[in-house]
Amino acid sequence: MPRLFTGIELPDAIRDDLSGLDLPIGGARWVSWDDYHLTLQFVGDVDPQPANDRHRYLEDIDVDAFQMKIKGVGVFTEKDPRTLWAGIEAGPGLEILARANQRAARNAGLPNPRLQAARKSFRPHITLARLRIPPIERVVRFLEKFGSYESEPFLVTHFSLFSARPGGGGGPYVVEDTFPLLGGLSRARDTIDPIANER
Image (cartoon, rainbow, N blue to C red):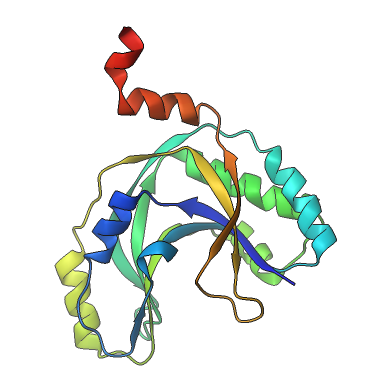
């Protein structure tokens, strides 16, 4: 039974940037370069038929491509930090896409406690490390050193369906399928070579 979630893959240049946000912290398990992503919707362990139903609903999502960038760092939670993350700055397109993913799961008949919680509070972030009883002074040092980090903006042209390790979850994550956003391909081409469109 696969453990599934949807999310946004990051460009290689952004992954390279994030991998540079590094400071020795005892008890930290850092996310590997190829596992950086933004989770849109955690689904969990899903039987094949509901997974197929949800896939069809994902194919029907019609959200415009949008700009996004990584900005700032933080922890969940402050008193007992367990997760070190990088923040997200994006327009309404990200929230619209997250809600569309939540609807797809709901329409496929996938009630899930974490799904229910996600509908109440979508807190977009990139997980950098998972912490286990870390030295608080090192965590504070990390937040001070990289608190003003800001990536270059990038265009989100698609979202992906990922699978994680069955049962326990976690990486390495596998991209099972990708779903294009409206106008993503043409806008990406404009960004890469705007002069070519004037020839």
